[in-house]
Length: 279
Image 1: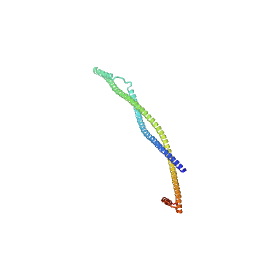
Image 2: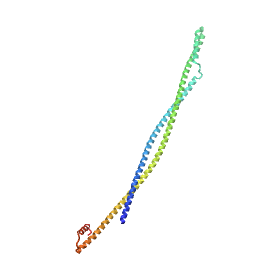
Image 3: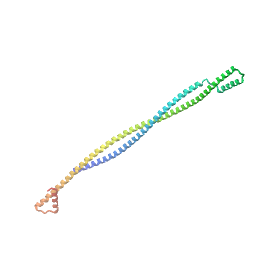
């Protein structure tokens, strides 16, 4: 009776342990799914970070090239301003109209042709004409310089526009680069947070695996204890059966000694007792 109670208690405990282990295994499955999901999110975030860092690097290189171009344009602007100053200096004080100079030359040449012959007068007129022609040539050069000046001013404005465009582009890229930098920082923080969470699930997973292993050890111990009890119960039943058989066999043997008749069933009992070694 005591053996049965112990056996039933162990069976009940074994069932409870088995249920607990099944529940733990289900919990482990859920933890693994959560951990794997987090690891997938971490992997995806890391890929995004790498892409953003590459884009940031490319934008930085573009800014570097634009700054080089900007420096080159500033150098051109300084050179152009210097040339404008030099041209203005050359033009300064030369404001006699070409038309007026040519008219005066024509007038002197006409006077030379129509006036009475006088060597001194001719030399004087020729000298004045030569001076005026020299001035005409000078004014033509000035006119070319003025055209150059207009071109230089136009070039200066074009350079200033280009500088403004480059600055605007640099500012635009800088804004984009800062946005990328901010996104990288946010993703880095997210990855750290996800890793902490994943590490927590991993620790919990290891703990649950240990608990499952402990339950397996307990189940094994109880199973062995049950086998032991079953062996003891079987042995007890066999001993009781032997005792009962021996008792009956002795009664039959007493009958034989007394010369009493025995039945076929009695003979069967004696044969069985002999086989079992109880007589």
